[in-house]
Length: 323
Image (tube, rainbow, N blue to C red; front, side, top):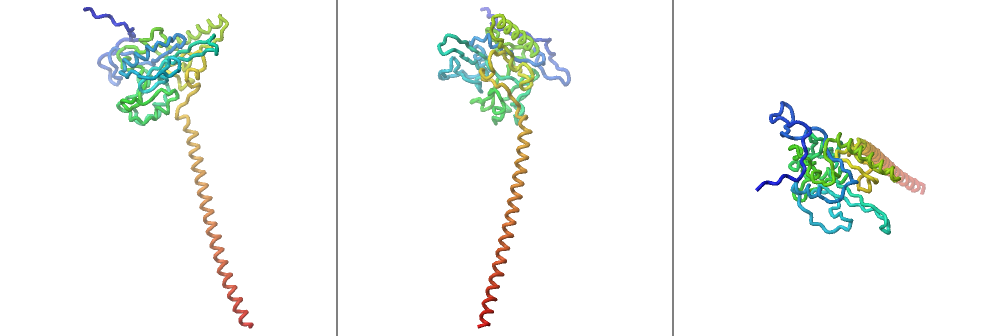
């Protein structure tokens, strides 16, 4: 029986295959891997249809368990958020008038942003979180100690503990597939090309052209030009290697308008710590001085009491002599 051809589209390596024997000092890159250049996702939310093919493909490739969840009542979104078992999450955002006469759906497939300046990588105490040759961020489960520092450091709420491995887990941008010249499972499965994979330079060019196209259409139709890119430039954590085209405020998509690294709080925290130490030292000095002054005052009172008693005794003796 003839073997059917693979239906899933496979990415073509951007350059020639690497030699099997790497040159001295070079990275051990498998043959056929993509070139070691920054790569990532561009997600065009305007063409997402909420099919969740990306969620299924991600779970299937990475061996993540299927969810058994109750209906949330939040439209068709029952996964609700990213976590250690859901590395892709499709949001359903309903915007309708009270009479349901006017409205629209906003859908977005959310994922780890693979920040250029990643807070999770900055705080990891074991070196479990690394930056790959594709400028993506990967958690090594066999090195992670489950301390949860990365969870608190991520401003996007991406990372959580996997209940099976007891370690932090998130999207790897299918690092294993990239090393074999295959695009990530989610983008390969997306039927509308809402999730696009490629080099960051190519994605930024395509995204900019798409924003111009949408805003031109809106301008011609007399509608607001509301399409823009989120995370495509370096203003947000040095840039996001997974960035988005949005048509509403970031908060509507449960994305922060601004984000900062944990290290950016160090100057203020250090100043507060030094100020607190100085304040405690001053308080201690004042307390010590007060105790010494109280001790001197008490000693002086005791001395005056003894002298007064002796004076009274001498007075009584004088009166006796007169009598």
